[in-house]
Length: 142
Image (cartoon, rainbow, N blue to C red; front, side):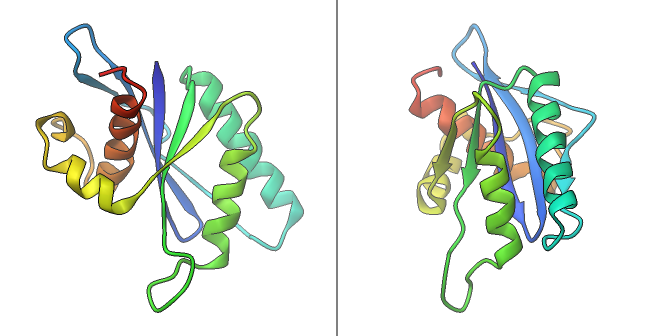
């Protein structure tokens, strides 16, 4: 199963595609597109363009599910409105389920050997990679 881990930062979705390997580990699939940005959250045209781009990305990379790292919705460290629009657009990709990873659960998961980062992975993709690997483990694929 191929899962795309998603870490949302502002109006940008950082994307890392992972799958399980024959040995029960995680395989990272480097993609040409590593992030998609919502240019103008107030523009319907921009929202549709983002949805089209994330849908095309999912089909090009045979993504069977998205796993988004959750963000705080309120308080001092709460995420802004554009990030929740990006989240909703990812959820709207047709025929592909969206899962969520709690940041505390991801921190615990990061301490396991399964969550080790592959060589060559850019730092900004670490949480996206862990989200995808976490969901693979949760689904029993690894």
